[in-house]
Length: 426
Image (cartoon, rainbow, N blue to C red; front, side, top):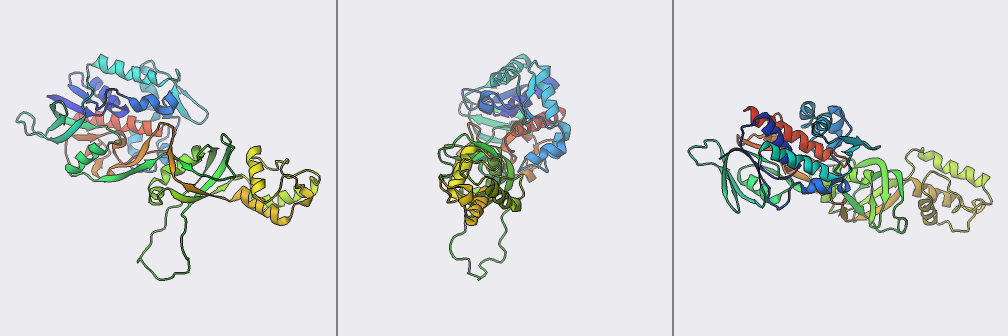
């Protein structure tokens, strides 16, 4: 008999176990992990460096990075936020550093530092770690000595516990077990992915990065003249628009601006079956109406130079060359000879380039999903189930996800800490 069984040997599972054991040293705690290795997502995060959290320490600001869970996490972040995460690791001899974009990593630049910290703490605190223990059933305990408790069955053995904390991340099998227990699971869809685009304007210039504003639009098929009302009310899709660094890749587009759109638009882009249109403004800092006037002035001043060789605006040279060609301006055309129509075409390419997205690719090794346990069925003061007492949740198993930058890990740390506090104090 355990006091607590934590299902899931990942970031949230370990973090909660450590806090429970420190708060209640006599508590019998077990972590059940389905695989032969633990903390696998920690290991690959941030390219093997582990993006532990983000240097945003104000709860009202950090919640803005969560497409799902923004409202619900505000209270929890007032209890445990990124500053507390920094303190946790530094107290255990793992200093963190801040990079220019706000992401925080261990100073060692190695995720193994975080893994070693967790494993050492679990060993020091006497927490039972059971690997190769894939859970096949979770049910209310029928044992006389465990009223209100739980039975957890793995492939190997049946365990009993007074309380259960689920920290299994995006695990369809566990979600199905929760459905069997009466919980609602928001259908999971991918989040944090890059856009697959085949277009001559970005072919051959992979590695180019620049600031851009990107807007997502649905692809309209068929005639727009049909006026018969087929539905009583057709909901308008949410506005999906963002600005930030855009990276051109072998397969299309990536970078923070694309990843942010993939997170905020996870549900909508899934509905589009990952076939949609984006409008890219390569010059978001410029007034659109002034671009054409700027090009006209350059035409009057740089008469003898070719348009192709004169990078008139602040974008990477290789991108400028491709956009000039896409505007119908040849390599030998001089500014004196370029027509107003061609300059208008170039203005459009610079400020509203249309690209068609056909599919997605997972962002590095970091697979994140939007979906999970319905937030209405969770008490966000304790992270206990509203349906079953003594059943708790932490991490990505619930319908919370964030943009890239350490925010998903912060959700794991915060939810795990609050669940641990609730379990040890009840």
